[in-house]
Length: 191
Image (cartoon, rainbow, N blue to C red):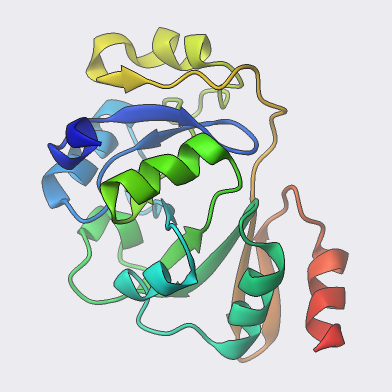
């Protein structure tokens, strides 16, 4: 996708709501996203990757328990918080030293990442404090011409991805979402 590679912003459907994408490798594109969305300082921005192999472009480590969850629930609405690689645009990690990563289950979102050949940002396509959009028209109403391309995937179910971290204390749910905590814990116990 030339527009994305050129620093443009793109609204696209995910499994749950519309996201707003920028080339996650570009400091300029990520800063544009922050400015347009009005992202709060100190709040990290998750990224989508095409597959498990692409995780290495943004994460310094991929611990085995997190890898097991990825194998079981990706593509899908599970965001894993992993130690971030050095050199990422600063707004992605917001000083946390970590990066939220997932492989999207929606065909359009996956095609976008695969077309770029690199990670794409995916916060919900609404200004900070606004309702996450379930229709492309809702995102257009928020951002208008500030976003170059709106990809319409119809009305989406809403909700959000489950955001989970693995640390020395085990699994921590940072945001409840589409995959229940009990399902994640059961998957870890099976291995």
